Length: 90
Image (cartoon, rainbow, N blue to C red; front, side):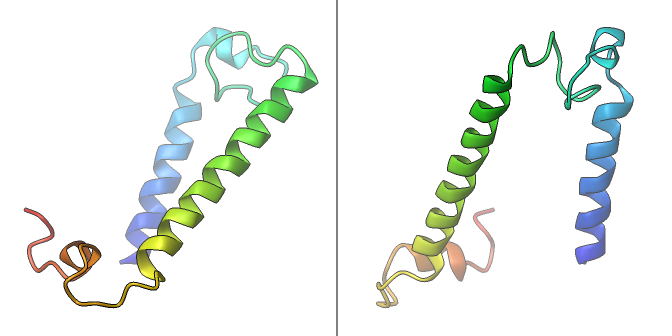
């Protein structure tokens, strides 16, 4: 099961760089063939992107922590409609 997810993610990552346009392939940066456009113009752009990644990962971690390890243990809490749903909302 996990192999299927790893394979899918790797195909998506590889295909994104395989179909880059000619302008994207000529960038002189870390994001050559990945990002579209001119690319970063200074080192501040790398810092901004790094900070955005850190904030996004922190928010994802905090949201998952609040959902799965919250102090609410009552079985009628709304989170259990998502966690223990038999039909997964379909």
